[in-house]
Length: 431
Image 1 (tube, helix red, strand yellow):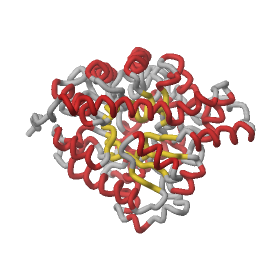
Image 2 (spheres, rainbow, N blue to C red; image 1 turned 135 degrees about the vertical axis):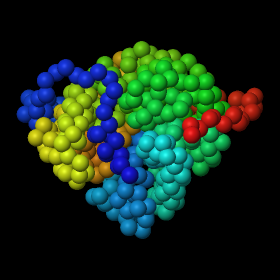
Image 3 (cartoon, one colour; image 1 turned 45 degrees about the vertical axis):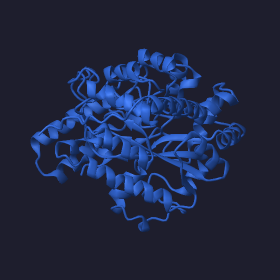
Image 4 (cartoon, one colour; image 1 turned 180 degrees about the vertical axis):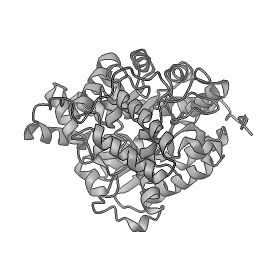
């Protein structure tokens, strides 16, 4: 199957092709680095992250364990550094990470062959075994669990389902996912599904269908965040109109700084402020860099040209790798990630921004320079302190905004469970 990395760098965006001429990002004038972070600011940031706790809402280690080790956890001792993986316990502790949502990710193309649910269960199995086989981890299901586990010195682990295709239109499957420990569902991944439009596919439903609206309400009743990363702007707006609980964006950025359709427009950021939700900022270079969207479109154009000339997959892979080497990656730094946080703070408010780095494999070049691995979170927060963020601001961004939204989500769920029956209507599956 296609790896998550291939999803990020080969999927063509369906918005209009950029009109700028192709340029070499490697040869471009580099962005100025942020002023050097003083050891005192770094120490202050590290202390605040230990207190917060630091919550990251998106890491793809379960997928990496399947891709690199076929799901055999005995191949990797996470108590020591694992250079082939996107996370391990020493690195997480060095990064002051207190809470991690592990992503249950299955490529959206599996909906065409009706194996999405089956593959999702494989991912849940890996994630649960990952959590239960490491003494440093403990599964959390509530905001109170998170605080208890963090106070006890362990890393609280939750799960998020990255793509609504995995429930195969079934609210029963949604409820089982919640029972297993999923605390958010990303409505789509790269492709549209039967009941919602994705950001990176052609417009089909113009947002949510009636089934989509029902499923958002069922998530509210269950106590599961509606995650609006990856969905179209119209789907974002529809979900925010329908939801009765705070939403999250588990790994997104500000559209005003990078007009990638994966990012959040300002009008939606204002709706998030009214909703009480949280936008968790990711570190992936094409989503952070101002040049990132243009780079992806040009890579997709180059790949189409290569495929028109070549048929052997190995040759295609080599040719596109050579293209990447010659053109270079779009520039992105810690300062750029901080700029996205600044913008979301300006438009939505300090209470509505968090962290969802989206580490998905061991190649640091895909992440913003300076944030290539899970040890590096303190450097980002030191940059925020340098920019004048208060200690309270840092605590909010690091995790307290998410805990506040989670408690509100749990409160809404408790009220709705007393008032409403479960959704039992099964959506129609295409033949």
